[in-house]
Image 1 (cartoon, one colour):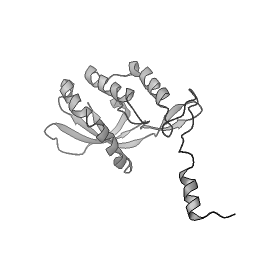
Image 2 (cartoon, helix red, strand yellow; image 1 turned 30 degrees about the vertical axis):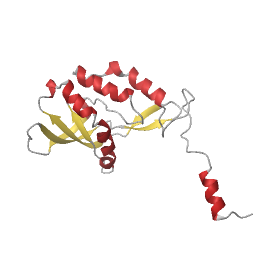
Image 3 (cartoon, helix red, strand yellow; image 1 turned 45 degrees about the vertical axis):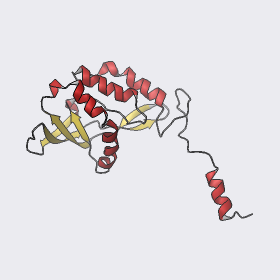
Length: 171
């Protein structure tokens, strides 16, 4: 029996929606590739006591992005400065910031071991660091201004990733 083009298209469109499998921990359907919203956000929250930027306002902003993440890397992460090597100044000092190239030794989360639900990182990756002057005086107003651009910044990283580098803001 042969199918006509019309029948074939009809069968394709009525087929099952794309699925991402079930989380091995909670057994719920994942909402994105390698992403169980419930379990991953819970794991991110459990790590809150393990890091601090030294600025409570910035810490709360980073926590907010983690608690409201909608994808596996849709949040900000505090990275200790000791995770950067080969730091090189790549511009003249601007009015409010300085730009550096560096290598982030651990790199971002990249792959999920689906049996253990533990993320591995990419390993060393070239990054761009932007140091903001007077960032120790970071205010809630500054965070509010950048909170609205959080999604835009995360979306922009897709283009940067293709070049194997990232824009990181180090406060």
